[in-house]
Image (cartoon, rainbow, N blue to C red; front, side, top):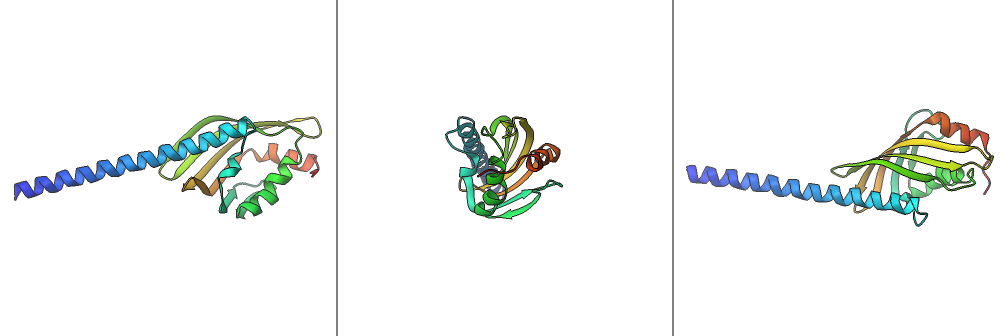
Length: 160
């Protein structure tokens, strides 16, 4: 009976350890995937948006002019990213401060800087909570300084 209990305890410990190791592998893979996408974006050889699943749910919290939930890559890109970028004379360049991974969620704290088409600089700090599945972003919750964002959005007309 004692041997049976001991074997059950050992089996339970083994299961916990292997599960923890598998989760750590997923977390590290997701963290690296997001880090690589930000590195590529910074070098202008790709974008974090390359990781968006076609059915991504992208939520911008707060009271910004673009706050809300966007359903699908196309909706988010058409309603936010393309009009935002069309207000800039230089690409937004990200500088990552930190990336954390917990399970299927990657948290990125980063700064973005660019020049607007009116000659004024745009700078903002972002915190993104990205839910990953199979190397793609399937859900995002985004926080940033809405005053800086809205100032650019209202001040500069989009030019496509």
